[in-house]
Image 1 (tube, helix red, strand yellow):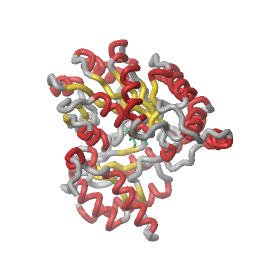
Image 2 (cartoon, rainbow, N blue to C red):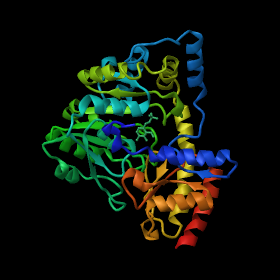
Image 3 (cartoon, rainbow, N blue to C red):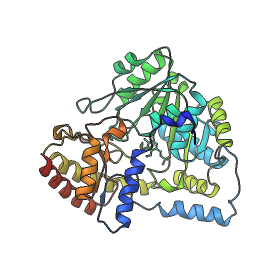
Image 4 (cartoon, rainbow, N blue to C red):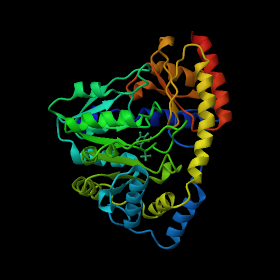
Length: 388
Ligand code: PLP
């Protein structure tokens, strides 16, 4: 069969592949320590589950408006005003099937063939592939451990050409966990404003912060930055709602309308009763977030200390998300070889940095229990002693 050219250049999601392999090994009875999934290991908080159950009982089982339930759009707009200082109302919001679809809709709505999209590396696996699916050109900006994997305003300035349309900005970052400080965000916002770029601000990890780190939405950096930015986010990471598939896009009304048109012809509305769970997530108590955060903080401390005590690894301390991104440069291995051998020989699942555009690193997620982390770190240390 002759398949469409648009998919020929697109790579499958390596994170999903590795996660599926680790899950298949587990299903075969193999004791795998898995650090591959970008998914909290907690159950969705009870009050959110109850709200979705009540919605089912109340018959919220039918098609709804493509842009989302009006109450949820309103709740998201209020949250963005309250927490992020972004002046949106319900018309500025599109409810999407996870944060992923909000980014995809934005690409299809905004990118024209040949438009350049600046993506700092390491990047979330789907950004470049989505740009390519929209016939755009990803322009990757490399960063290093020394710069704490943060891109500088100057680097962005130098990458701008007459074709540059969009900058993708993700803080806290997947895969590095790095958080741009408010001053760093303001400096990048200034570059985007001066060059008349749009900014896709992926804020899905905004609540997962440690050691007093602060999150500033790039759209809140200045009135001009607000005009040129779009928030793509969702409920999956903050409220352990990965399987619910609820996210959102927030931005100028014409963009929201156009993205809604795309969604109306592809997936229609997000599962109606799941949206009622999302309303409870934003309107209900937030202590569940603090409890998950306390557990993440403890795991992060343990894993970071363990990694930095191992031969051949170097891991900066990130202030957000639930990932560590150590450099394996001293081992002399490619990230793919490193991760495949580690999984096959010691049954530890990690993700090659190559999937995120940085081949001399690997990603470990600590969104798993402390016992698995302890056992996994022992195995990783043995593996390193074997190869160094
Ligand atoms: N953005 C980033 C940076 C992510 O890490 C993820 C998920 O891993 C998403 C967006 C999409 O999240 P979801 O579609 O599950 O809401």
